Image (cartoon, rainbow, N blue to C red; front, top):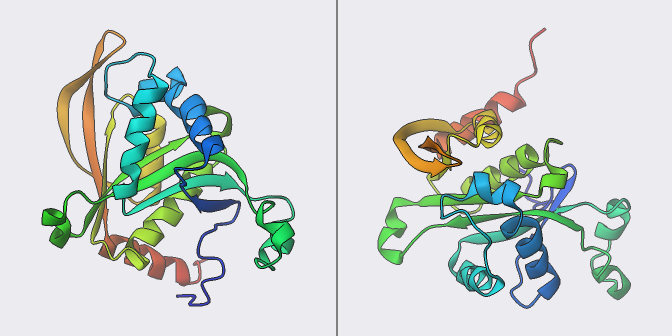
Length: 217
């Protein structure tokens, strides 16, 4: 593992910034591009389908302080290598901010459950940036952080079977289906399953070892 840490909060095309509750621009982005986009709400949420008030959504954001990790997924600036090479220069501080395209968070629940070392995944990418591999790239980074830095044993999620594109991404990254609650979600006049998936620490480490081996001809 690279212990220089310089590139710990980035991947090939993306950077991962901490969610800041005092950053009104980020909160507006999350509300308008995530919470208020029906194309996202219809797939990501199993709550009653309808417009979400800003007050209600901002109240939910206030709970992010309890998460193990909450990050905003951002595109790297074109001159990222130049900017990232000198974090100390004041004129670079604001320029380091990438264009936000989504969010990810890890929730571990109350302290009484901490000994299980399980983290629940929440993730969303704006419609304009879907279908370009950003979700897969970000999720691979998050899995790496979960096990290499978060000291978790299991990363789990639940998703509606309606969200086929997301399920494909989860499987691609290494998540395994643990089971289903059949016909547990009602949306657009139809019933859909709730799919439970997870990836274990040993699964992720096996992936890392496999990627180190030279590919066979």
